[in-house]
Length: 379
Image (cartoon, rainbow, N blue to C red):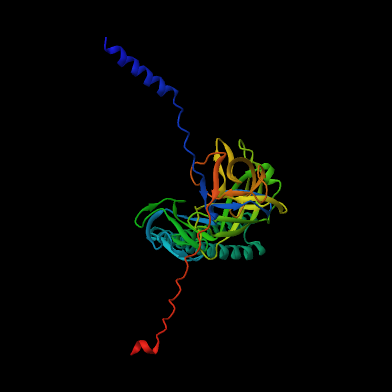
């Protein structure tokens, strides 16, 4: 029965523990931002723009093809070599074509000799016909022989011209000024008629082909200036202009293709690079703007964080124009409000926040005052 007092004591202690008040929650520390972490939303003049993107391609490009079949004896250019229009870049084996030309020229000589004989016979028959020594029928036969000889001579000359051109076509020349962008065959290979040998690209000007919405295309016109950024060139902006706009929308997408020319005489760009840019499509107007780095996408919406007093507020905003790293905010933000400039990690709405006080510069130590020494102390 000695257990009863012990049980009663434990029950009293348990009841006291249950009635004890819970400890107060720990205070949440306020977020601290440096002055560099914040930026004021400001009014900026911004013009409506149309965004463009596409691949750069040479403005002119030509492929050298074999006009005659044969073995490629020599090809003196490779990818990256610069060539001039008319420059000899290769040769096809010409032995067969030289022989054909020699045979055609021999046929011309034979046909010419036959024509000379036929013309002499006709002249003789004309004098005999005038004296009534031969019949008109005999003269017509001689005249016909002369016409046939003339036709054979003309045909032989035409065949010789074809053979001469075929021989000349064994020499391959660059069709335009440019740079060799592709070498399709190698020396020693046999190429057929119209076989592709090399491709030459003129990159002094490049063309950007971009698709835009029909509504945006209606605000643009040939001659409009554009600015593009090219991958691999950092923040370098390159100017160009719209050269032409397709009059018909692409099937399926209903987008309009436009073509812009980029001056590349300095040779900084290459065909095949991806480029992005914009073209101004109206007059500039003032908009509340923030750096693009301040915007986040959360749940499919554009949001940013605003420091209002000692609280951090999450704002859902609507955006419009983007220019030079700034984005126009059309709803959800007023000019002068302080915005978190960068993505600093997860932030909570309505959390305590403050600006870290600026650290004062370190004080410069003052030199010690000189100690006066009395004459008596030196004795």
